[in-house]
Length: 232
Image 1 (cartoon, rainbow, N blue to C red):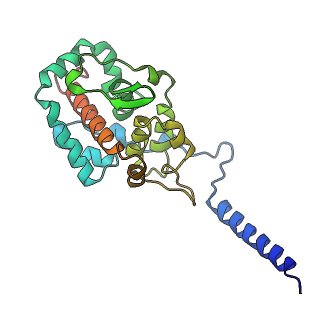
Image 2 (cartoon, one colour; image 1 turned 60 degrees about the vertical axis):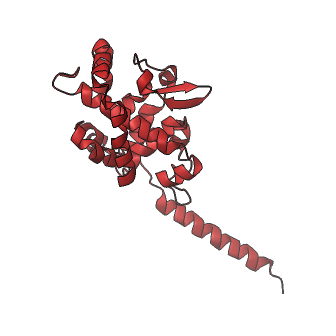
Image 3 (cartoon, one colour; image 1 turned 45 degrees about the vertical axis):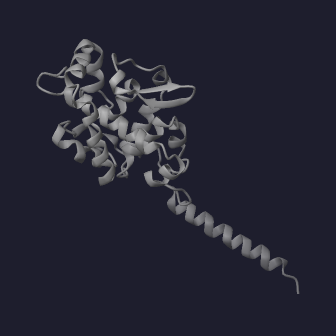
């Protein structure tokens, strides 16, 4: 008795089953049948940047309670120099209204990246608040994939709860291209992996990077949007 026909037949059955599963998961979009992005709720554009809203806003951006608490508490590191930051915003108001005021296509968590994240020798870091004398748009921003990240992560019909945190983290790590391609842990396919907990295991420094960035971004946006701020 030969086993070859049985082996070949079994392989064919497995192949058909795998193809069937992939087809079920695949969403085929025909011309003129794409998602109606005009009706997508872009939740970041409805946030109120107030001191009392910090924790809630950070959670809406994808942080768990503990991380949101840490980010909110991190604001206290530079709150004592509020007048200096207000003066910094005032001095550059003509440029910074497009960054910290809710009038651009991209919301503040994405736009502020170009001013608050530096790059040296291929490594990105958040600007040191106490040394900040002027907000400068960084060279890496010119060829940035951040707008594409926003569209893919925030304007999706099946937007995930950690969307903002995961997209911003990809930028902080200089891995925007990986996130757009769906490389693990930005993968949502059948065999992929998604989530900030998984990213933390691979990139332990991302938690402190994200906390530093979100805290400073939120605080500056708060100041810009007060009745006396540059957005008024």
